[in-house]
Image (tube, rainbow, N blue to C red; front, side, top):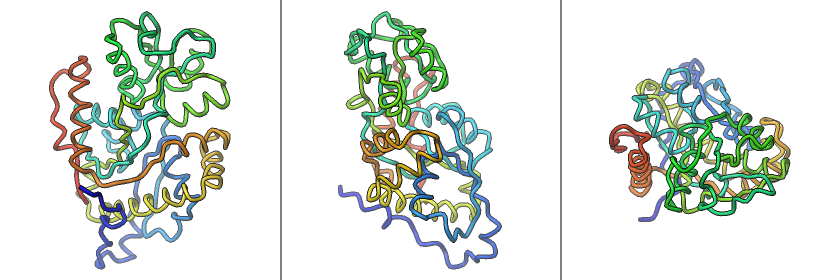
Length: 307
């Protein structure tokens, strides 16, 4: 089935949403390493907003998921695996749209002289990553592809900055991470991608909102508008990759070389959530149950909402 452009799927704001009311709305947006904000700023899509945006930036999905669960934010960008963990733990959130990306940048990174080149080489090694992150997921999938399990390695659950430092120091053998950390590690730290995420994960990232925000009519309309602006901004960013890379660089403090590599190779595009996406999310849930990270089977059908 052909998927229509998201711009055709996002409804026009209701005429009854008066500007005086909209101006009183504050949409609390959770971002990871400034990615959404950078696109919107670079494309000048934050001008003439009929509502206010309160930004919160997170280094990884786990604390962002906690913020969504605690109702500290209204909407946030989150990977497929962290969203699953949050919902399985009872978070009252729904995925609204999906950002389809090339999964290469979710990768297992090693030092240049590391003997790790394939998934089979992971046996006996120590892997640093965020628990429940897309990096954790790809590490587990890589192990499974070689007939290994988590019992064949040692996991150390660390935040990205600590994990990278541990790898550089030699305290761990592998760092399982994601973009833009992967691109930074390659271009600035001269680390090597041993195993990339292609064929191991879907590459799906979601924009998720709390149930309470979706039940608030004014915030729901603001979210519709935000999605349209975000979709347009992403298209602009790929059309002006150099300019966008500089803006993203300034916001997250990464060199333009790293931000350009990260965003350019991701080939991201926002879409509506279709049956294939739901199927992919269910496969992720089933895998986590199989490896024991979910205590019971989880049906993802209630994880999504249309605006």
